[in-house]
Length: 197
Image (tube, rainbow, N blue to C red):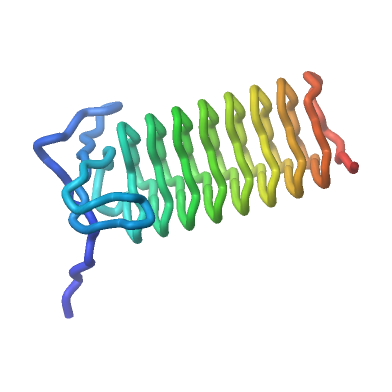
């Protein structure tokens, strides 16, 4: 029985770089990926090893995926984004701009992480949620449904932001707080209690 896996890319050893002490390789498409508008022969971003990328996922531009991170399904990582540690980006998720997803964080479904946003720890961003600007989501926090965390906002601890809630400006949501329904939180004081619209 063969262990051969039909990969849609190859590592370009001649286009490798050293980043944070790790050797990363540019990828080259070996077949068309219509969903990503990628043609066989197109050069993508950087990964450390083949296990970083699978399914029909693609890494573009100067984006970097390394460590034990996994990008798979139809996910897309582009711009100068970084996915590292044990992070997973999958389904139709997109990580772009200068965003970082690391630690044991998961970004999946149709979620988007972009700008200079940072998702790390054991955080999960999913459904149609967006994390953008300079926002941080970390710890065991969850952002999901159609929620948005943006600007300099921080969501951490065991906090949850969901439904159509928006957490923005310098707001901090933490502990076991929940922000949901149509809530708009944009205060600069930390928020520890649950919010109900």
